[in-house]
Length: 380
Image 1 (spheres, one colour):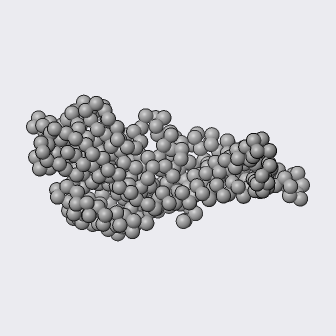
Image 2: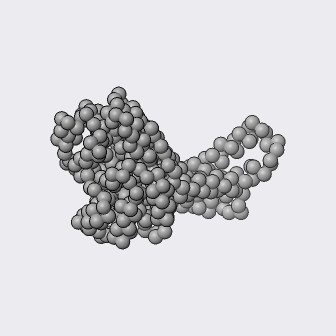
């Protein structure tokens, strides 16, 4: 990985304070933990302090940009070391060091922490490189004796951190399902996707065998609005090239538009609100006619927001992605603290909301929260 990209994955100043707080905590911990680890080395006290201070400062600097890979790996090294400390305390006071006497030595040398760190990384790389199908079964009286299957895919971030072959393998499996409707829920590409890869992925998705076609809504990354957060400071494709690649692949763009399927289902595609929710878009009510309310109405919104708006407009199902189910610990915890619908199926009176963790992750090459998935929704 390019070392610049490693440190400058993305940068948002509003998260700087979070980085400073974590940096102080981890930096102070590193100061004392490193000093303890090298205490038996034949070094002067001043040299030990200097080495410990350098590593503590480095840990602090690494945490300033919490969106970078180096911050995540530094944080996980901290967690691994903290876990090793806890186990050492248990060994010392609960077991009195009566067996496995190698544990104290492994702990002091930092080997125990490195073992836990390796386990965390292996689990994270595994999570990023395995894609599962998640299935939901819903019932309604709006479609009579008919039944429909909707295949929902979001957050592919194609050809950035996940092997593109995994996406193609998933498409082969999806073709075997022969879904009635395929929905691409945004962030299929992002700022790190090349023009050729962008064209390739939409061609692949356009080839999916479905009864009523493939539909697409924009995510907050597809149009490359955050390009200055990456080492390549120029867009790799224009909006026109993006739209042309989508439509030429036989995929229908629903940007504040609706599509009626078999006179039973209404797909309402919303434009994305952007990272700061500052983009203007049409109201759901303006896209619906009175006759639509007798049909099963599905809102496609990249971000899991406007739940109350959709509920108030008589929507039956909202499909979203964007959250990645946190992707890396502890982001899911903070998402839920801010009342974000992070992952899974939620019931809001008469409306069902499904939030997918996405076909891939974003930015960081690991996933240890949620899973990489495509979603099959059966409506009966």
